[in-house]
Image (cartoon, rainbow, N blue to C red; front, side, top):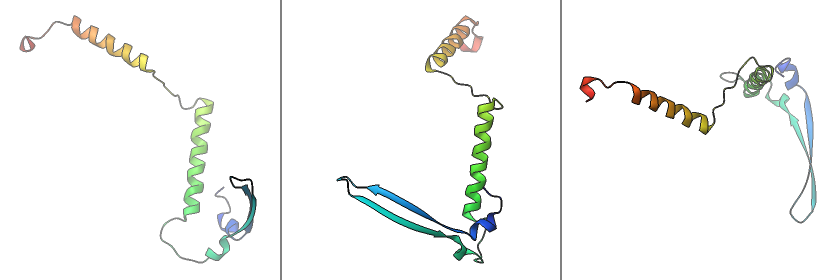
Length: 102
């Protein structure tokens, strides 16, 4: 997505949108997207489209790691947590109390 970024900004494209309102009337619109108008403008920092592309790449990697098992997901249910808390309370009650706690 971020490869050939400068080249992609030189190309224009159109988006055709068709939709209906609540009474069934159909609307059709065509929107021309032309980023070439932005070529040569100066700005501070990375271009927003470049940042979006990089973030999408990171999301893609994260999903791949989750799906291949490189990242393990540990899930606890409410019952698991309550059971663990009960075990910890029982263990604490079995321990002898210190003199300063009496």
